[in-house]
Length: 603
Image (tube, rainbow, N blue to C red):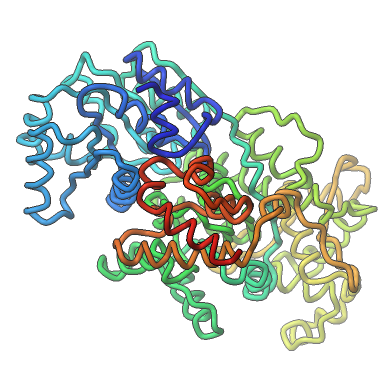
């Protein structure tokens, strides 16, 4: 079978996405390769389809057990002979897989890295060496690079695979890698004359927004209300924040589960499974949650605090909209986030010039005024051709530039100076707004000339100005647990001379006009165009029923993309159903009659 025929038969796809065919052809030719495609770009298919087309056993190195299981469940559901092998399996299940390997029953085998290079895996390796191995695919390959955002020491040992299978081609796959990380991946894996394919880092279906953190819970609720009944992830920077926020959400009627490395293994596993199986749609998590998540219909990701780098942000926010449909990514950040990261990294002895630079890049993104899509792809070295992405707070007109940024900056800087450079952003904000609070009066700050100087500005606006002045290097933060604002040399210069920073620009969230709904991104409206929403919900219920009966996550049955297309075109024959995106031959034979019956029931 040809690659297009395999694609159509097993996955129901009639065309290749960008770079998929080139990546598959490298595997078919037995030439080493490195593929970088953003989440949702179809990386897995680039080694799954060739595994069917080529003779022998394809070995896929995958870092997380849950990811292996989900991908194998999906493959088996599509009619592909695949298995996974890891230490979490019962001994009888491992024995069954071992028999299947010896008997040549599988085309693909997913294995954890430690199973291939760790202690105690010699017998398993000897078994694999006795078989014809078609190629080796290393998924989440950025884990091998010390410059990557999720470095794992066990991945470093994967270079030994080249020694064991010198004639077998090796292929690396990742969603996020700068030029430096790509070079390191190829060097560490010992890739030879590798085909290097780098796709666009842009995710046009994602709507990016950045909010200056003010009333965090209210800001989170604003996002949740836009996505009621939809799946989402809220990332926090500490376990304590995860537990607290998840408890508060549950107390206020938003069903959520916490997820972090401090939870007992069985509880963490139950919470992840509940999310994957759509028993719960909201997870509050640290970055420990995500790489093994194959749920495709996550409609929003909230960062309740800034991550440590743009690589982390790209990877974590990219867990939204993996099905290609519209999704929202909201970063709620403040200058305190970056101070916290710096203090933690210094304390752990992990701070370096490189890490410091990564933090600065993240800080600049959070405080930037301009297209978010352009800023993100530019970080990874890609030019962004559009003048208007139509899918971020800036391009949707939700931000507005401040008319006299120097005057605004000098007011904030003056307040920081007047309170003695001994207080944080919250206190400075209270003084500028003229807050009649005990904290302000007890220190006599209500008598300062700057008291009430910006009384018409909202808390959000003032916090946003502070964060932008930090990013511009006019303010800095000192202190440890309680960060205080201090003037930098540049900030002091601007305070003395209004012409010291002529290129300064500041922005603020545009205040909503009464009775006027905010502009919606084009991607948010196009995805539902022509879709019968009642039929879509009935198809979702049918999918859930089948998934529960078979003990697999609902997206293994059908992705939302497929259900929306069915609800849009309403096929009533098997022939028409086979033309739906994501309905392969196996799925049509297995579920076709049930789907058609659901469509006809409404007619």
